[in-house]
Amino acid sequence: MATAVKKTISLPPDLAEEIEMIAEEEGKTLSAVIQDALRSTRRERLKKEFYQIQGYWSSKAKEKGILTEKDLEKYLKK
Image (tube, rainbow, N blue to C red; front, side, top):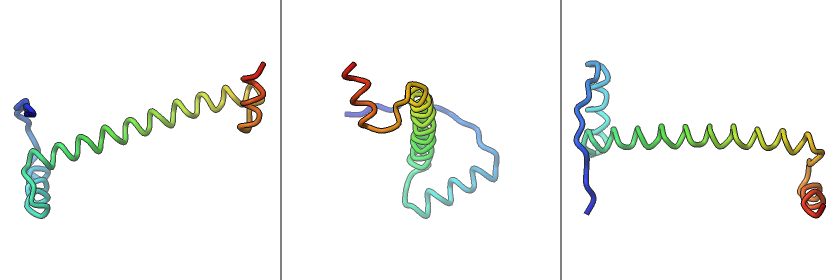
């Protein structure tokens, strides 16, 4: 059985009103809407981090002349 940690948060009135509307429209609890938003934020942050890492290693490969999969295979056979 999953456990939950209860936290108290403060929201500005306009954001509180918006989240309540979203919860009502989607038939969710306030907690579920906030959890969805946090998961989405986490997913976007991880995606950004992935692309940064990918860009780093891509530039390192280019420095070594690795531009294609065949180039990589040749490099790894050395």
